[in-house]
Every structure is written in structure tokens, then in C-alpha cells.
Image (cartoon, rainbow, N blue to C red; front, side, top):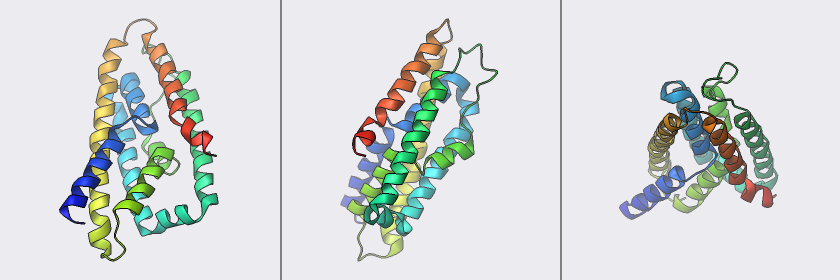
Length: 199
């Protein structure tokens, strides 16, 4: 990948990573409800899971998803179901003072979610189809994509989790936390509406 493509891809990766989507909304909610320390397994799960999906996509999953529409459709439907469940879970979270039955998303849950995250899959497929060169070596083509995605995933996850922690301080009174969770739940559903309309 030459310098121009490297810069172009870096901008693409950063913009797609930092803009609102299911991962970022969930990280912000977790930061607001549980703080940064308890959100760390969620962050590790997102970064490692997303990076692993990028690696697998570079090794052939991207080709399968573009050439087998049924598989892509299955992942979309699975993603919609999982995101709807997570939105329901967030909607029913209590206030900051009532967290006995609530728990943050675990590393394993966050890792697995990357396989059915509609935004993540779309970004990965777009990146591989746009920025890879079939005439280049595997190392030259895919290593920059994997490394850059890994770095921007970390940066984005930390920014959104920290923003949630900051918001959580403002929400520590009355029913503000409950309303934040419910609005976040609605936003999470809104984030997958374009995917639903494409089914």
C-alpha cells in the first residue's frame, strides 16, 4: 500500500470507527453505568474481536460475504436480533444506585458481537474491496489494514467509554440515568434501521 492509499485508508478507518454505531453506543452506556474499570473487558472484547474479524476477512471471509449473499443476510439478521436484545437490556437498566442485577458486557460477549455487528461488517468489506490490491503480496496488502484497524479500534473504544464515564457523573442524580439508558436504547435500535430496510 503506497503512502497516498495509506493516508486515505487511515482517514477512512478513523472516521468509520469514531462515528456512532452499536459498538460505540454500547461502550458509552457501559462507561456511564459501570465506570471505566468495569468497562475494560468490554473494550478488550471489542478491539480483539474486531481485529480478529478483520484478519479472517482478509483471509477470505470478505470474499465469502460478497459472493454468498445468503451468508451476509444471515449475519445481518443475527446482528439485528443481538442488537435488539442489547437495547432491551439497556432499556431495563436501573439507576446508578440500583445495579445489583445489572452487569457490563463481558469480554466474550463483546468479542462474539463483532461477528454480527452490521456496521463493522460493512466497514470491513468496504475496506478490503477498496484498499486491497490483488497483485500485491499478502503482507503488503493486509498487514497495514489490520494494524490500522487495531489502532483506531482502541482509540475509538477508549474515547466512547471515557465519554460515558464523563456523562455518568452528570447522571448520578435522580432518574437521569434511567432516561439516558432509555434514550441510548432507542439510539441503538435507530442505528440498525438502515440494515433492517435493506433486508
